[in-house]
Image (cartoon, rainbow, N blue to C red):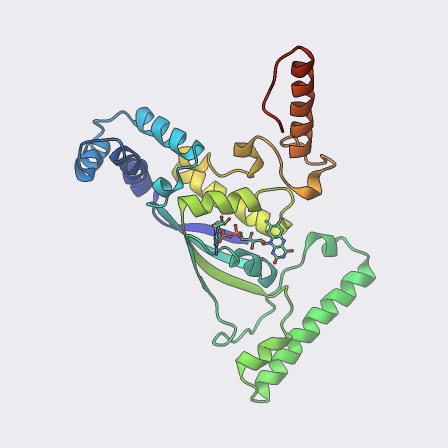
Amino acid sequence: MKATLLFPDKDIVERFYVPLIYTACRTCYSELEPDEIFRRAVAGEVDGAKQQKLIQGVIESGHGSTIEHIVFTFGISGVSRTLSHQLVRHRAGVAFDQQSQRYVKYKGASTMLPATLEDADPELRRRYEEQIEGSLDLYGDLLGAGIPGEDARFVFPNATRTNLVMTTNLRALIHMSGLRLCTMAQWEIRRLFQLIRHEIFNVSPFLGSFLAPKCVPLGYCDEMNNRDGHCPIRPHKDVVLAAWAEKAKTARAAGRELPVT
Ligand SMILES: Cc1cc2nc3c(=O)[nH]c(=O)nc-3n(C[C@H](O)[C@H](O)[C@H](O)COP(=O)(O)OP(=O)(O)OC[C@H]3O[C@@H](n4cnc5c(N)ncnc54)[C@H](O)[C@@H]3O)c2cc1C
């Protein structure tokens, strides 16, 4: 699996991305026109740390439109159709183009082998591989018999590899990362977002720092499947609410009222 940041490069990100978000934020509170705010920010007339502080505060407050002005384009390759089907469920602020199974003739073996199957009982793994190879062989035979690719592809397994180009604004990227870096996410898409985060860190550790499982900015976990607290990154919402209820009870006993949970 590969995830490569195609655009922008480090120079562009360093020079323009923080000033651009800063301009969007400052325009809301300034008499200056946006082009002047942007000029000053790019020229270094506004301290970089000050720009970052404002951006940090605005993101943490959930004022998301300010970070829709910057986009990142990734080349994603060697992922399964299982992954791509999950990825393209994201609709807001993200665009995809994907390798066509109608127009591309798949010649070589092009499937993913999950680690659990790699380590599985040898007989089960043999049957899995036989099934996959059988599908790909049949695909070749169907094409050879003149069946069009758009129909022959019906035999492809979910393990079939695919390539995509994904362009996303920063708001959508933070949202997707929140869901897909979570330990509840499927391993393959989680791996993809770890690579994506790595790519963003390479061009901007500051912007990369916003890509985290959703529980990190929330401060608690809201996943139903983590009610048992097996993922320890943040306490589960139920635990936090129970602690709050306990605190409210203690306060009430002492004659003070806290907001009701
Ligand atoms: C761990 C995990 C398990 C999952 N399991 C399943 C499953 O079993 N079955 C299944 O079908 N899917 C599943 N999904 C996919 C999930 O339901 C979403 O479709 C997917 O994560 C896209 O996220 P999103 O809805 O936030 O969409 P995005 O397009 O990323 O939208 C971003 C945000 O914009 C807003 N938004 C976008 N479109 C609209 C709209 N039309 N109306 C109002 N607001 C909108 C919402 O606030 C949304 O959160 C799973 C996802 C995860 C992370």
